[in-house]
Image 1 (cartoon, rainbow, N blue to C red):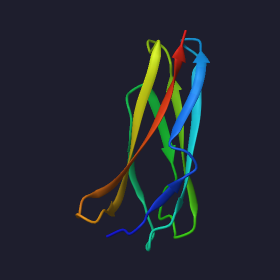
Image 2 (image 1 turned 90 degrees about the horizontal axis):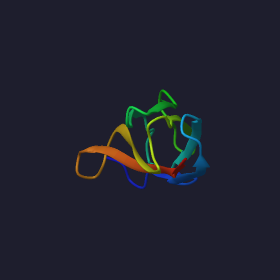
Image 3 (image 1 turned 180 degrees about the vertical axis):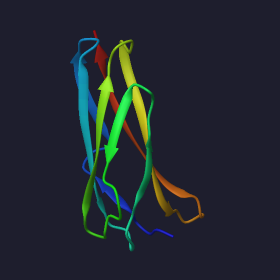
Image 4 (image 1 turned 135 degrees about the vertical axis):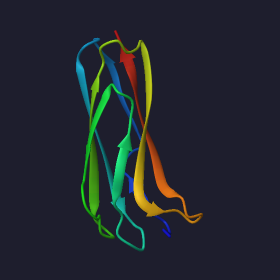
Amino acid sequence: MIDSVTVFEYELIDFGKVREGEPVYGRFAFTNFANQPLEIEMVSTCQCIEAEWSKGPIQTGETAEILLQLNTKGEGPDLLKTIDIIFKNEDERGYPYIKQVYIRGKIE
Protein backbone atom coordinates (compact mmCIF):
# COMPACT_ATOMS: atom_id res chain seq x y z
CA MET A 1 0.00 0.00 0.00
CA ILE A 2 1.20 3.49 -0.84
CA ASP A 3 1.12 6.50 1.45
CA SER A 4 1.52 9.95 -0.12
CA VAL A 5 2.83 9.11 -3.54
CA THR A 6 3.80 11.42 -6.34
CA VAL A 7 4.23 15.10 -6.89
CA PHE A 8 4.00 16.15 -10.52
CA GLU A 9 5.67 19.32 -11.78
CA TYR A 10 2.32 20.00 -13.48
CA GLU A 11 -0.75 17.97 -14.32
CA LEU A 12 -1.87 19.86 -17.44
CA ILE A 13 0.05 20.77 -20.58
CA ASP A 14 -1.62 23.47 -22.66
CA PHE A 15 0.16 23.57 -26.01
CA GLY A 16 -1.88 26.50 -27.30
CA LYS A 17 -2.57 26.69 -31.04
CA VAL A 18 -1.03 24.35 -33.60
CA ARG A 19 -1.81 23.47 -37.18
CA GLU A 20 -3.50 20.18 -37.84
CA GLY A 21 -0.91 17.57 -38.75
CA GLU A 22 1.90 19.15 -36.70
CA PRO A 23 3.22 16.84 -34.00
CA VAL A 24 3.03 18.09 -30.43
CA TYR A 25 5.44 16.93 -27.73
CA GLY A 26 4.93 16.95 -23.98
CA ARG A 27 6.73 15.86 -20.83
CA PHE A 28 5.27 15.07 -17.43
CA ALA A 29 7.84 14.72 -14.65
CA PHE A 30 7.10 13.55 -11.13
CA THR A 31 8.93 12.78 -7.92
CA ASN A 32 8.23 9.68 -5.85
CA PHE A 33 7.41 10.60 -2.25
CA ALA A 34 5.94 7.20 -1.43
CA ASN A 35 7.28 5.05 1.37
CA GLN A 36 8.36 2.51 -1.25
CA PRO A 37 9.63 2.32 -4.84
CA LEU A 38 7.03 2.98 -7.54
CA GLU A 39 6.87 1.37 -10.95
CA ILE A 40 4.76 2.40 -13.93
CA GLU A 41 2.95 -0.55 -15.45
CA MET A 42 1.48 1.35 -18.39
CA VAL A 43 0.44 4.73 -19.69
CA SER A 44 -3.03 4.60 -21.22
CA THR A 45 -3.78 7.16 -23.91
CA CYS A 46 -5.79 7.51 -27.07
CA GLN A 47 -4.46 6.17 -30.38
CA CYS A 48 -3.31 9.67 -31.36
CA ILE A 49 -0.70 9.76 -28.54
CA GLU A 50 2.52 7.79 -28.29
CA ALA A 51 3.96 7.55 -24.79
CA GLU A 52 7.35 6.57 -23.38
CA TRP A 53 8.05 6.36 -19.67
CA SER A 54 10.71 5.51 -17.14
CA LYS A 55 11.07 1.75 -16.86
CA GLY A 56 11.95 -0.04 -13.66
CA PRO A 57 11.51 1.01 -10.03
CA ILE A 58 11.49 4.70 -9.14
CA GLN A 59 13.02 4.98 -5.70
CA THR A 60 11.77 7.32 -2.98
CA GLY A 61 13.02 10.82 -3.79
CA GLU A 62 13.78 10.02 -7.43
CA THR A 63 12.22 11.83 -10.38
CA ALA A 64 10.83 10.05 -13.44
CA GLU A 65 9.19 11.25 -16.62
CA ILE A 66 6.58 10.43 -19.21
CA LEU A 67 7.19 11.69 -22.75
CA LEU A 68 4.29 12.14 -25.13
CA GLN A 69 3.94 12.74 -28.84
CA LEU A 70 0.50 13.78 -30.08
CA ASN A 71 -0.48 13.31 -33.72
CA THR A 72 -2.86 16.21 -34.39
CA LYS A 73 -4.12 14.95 -37.74
CA GLY A 74 -7.90 14.62 -37.57
CA GLU A 75 -8.05 16.10 -34.07
CA GLY A 76 -9.64 19.31 -32.84
CA PRO A 77 -10.52 22.06 -33.04
CA ASP A 78 -10.67 22.03 -29.22
CA LEU A 79 -8.56 19.25 -27.80
CA LEU A 80 -8.56 17.85 -24.28
CA LYS A 81 -6.99 14.44 -23.70
CA THR A 82 -6.64 12.46 -20.48
CA ILE A 83 -3.57 10.32 -19.89
CA ASP A 84 -3.88 7.57 -17.27
CA ILE A 85 -0.63 6.58 -15.57
CA ILE A 86 -1.16 3.13 -14.08
CA PHE A 87 1.36 1.98 -11.50
CA LYS A 88 2.12 -1.59 -10.43
CA ASN A 89 1.69 -0.38 -6.84
CA GLU A 90 -1.65 -0.44 -5.02
CA ASP A 91 -3.58 2.38 -3.38
CA GLU A 92 -5.03 2.21 0.14
CA ARG A 93 -8.01 0.14 -1.13
CA GLY A 94 -5.82 -2.46 -2.84
CA TYR A 95 -6.43 -1.18 -6.39
CA PRO A 96 -3.66 -0.19 -8.79
CA TYR A 97 -2.55 3.38 -8.12
CA ILE A 98 -3.63 5.55 -11.07
CA LYS A 99 -2.74 9.17 -11.72
CA GLN A 100 -4.43 11.26 -14.42
CA VAL A 101 -2.76 14.11 -16.29
CA TYR A 102 -4.07 16.14 -19.23
CA ILE A 103 -3.09 17.88 -22.44
CA ARG A 104 -5.15 20.49 -24.21
CA GLY A 105 -4.92 22.94 -27.06
CA LYS A 106 -6.48 24.34 -30.20
CA ILE A 107 -5.92 22.74 -33.58
CA GLU A 108 -6.35 24.89 -36.64
